[in-house]
Length: 107
Length: 107
DNA sequence: ACTTACCGTAAGTAATAACTAACCAAATAA
DNA sequence: TTATTTGGTTAGTTATTACTTACGGTAAGT
Figure: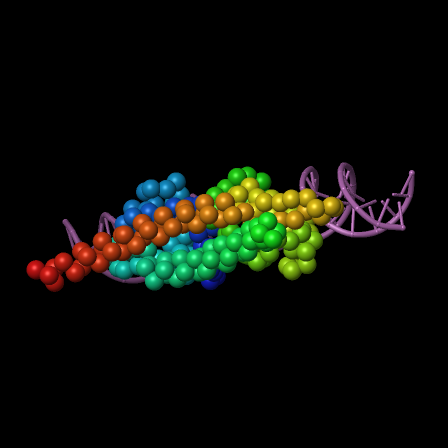
């Protein structure tokens, strides 16, 4: 999973990438800073960041020679909405299934 | 990702597995039924189901010679809660960042 | 008992993803 | 200008994952 577009859940499927994303939610950080937190090389972090960026979950801005990455509010909201729809469907299905069990008792 | 325990996001990281999970949210289904919906073999579906089960996202019951899988309400709720905490953290951070920008204007 | 339907598991393969090392580019500092 | 810092990209390797085929096991039907 290193070079093509993908949806939010796939982008967060890798543990290291999820951890990087989580770190960026706490506060914006540079690539080198992030690399310091995890047992992978700086290029590996760069590649994870590219994938997160393609998924719209992070954005970046240049600041001198450094590049600061931050979680992207819009992308996060989009993923949240997508998953909320899923939870909604699930809840509706659970409720319907429960009612199919309870109805006979009401008779 | 075929044999060890993992958290919810990693379990949904694979596209085929996510699709299977989504199908089970719509309605409980047997393994063979699921395999009919996707371009993979039945054993492949079985393996995906095992991973989803290890993640607590699905449960299964025997029904004759068939085995019916269904989304697990408790596991779904747990994952939802975990992600809601993440969204909450993100929202708080975005709000704090926005205020750091707006404060100077208030002076 | 035999057959059929359905499914899990094991083994092996093929595909893909994650990673490192090496290189290059841009911005700042001396 | 030269050196330093920082980080993206490429190439190649390693590790992991998804997959199929083959097999065995259980439950229901004949």
